[in-house]
Length: 64
Image (cartoon, rainbow, N blue to C red; front, side):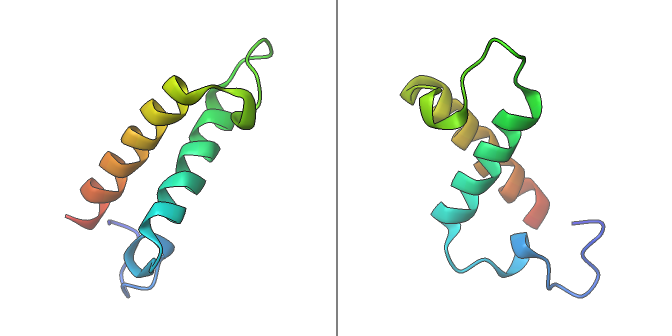
């Protein structure tokens, strides 16, 4: 990752990758939702899975 010069960022050092993916997916959802969309907990499995997929892709790309 460009800003990770010492290898100590959360993405680089996460021991719980599933937890990291869940956290990032929720933050992505909350950061892009419009007023009519529900909170992450009520987003539904379809959207949660899509955002988890995006978070996992971002993590892999960041570590490359």
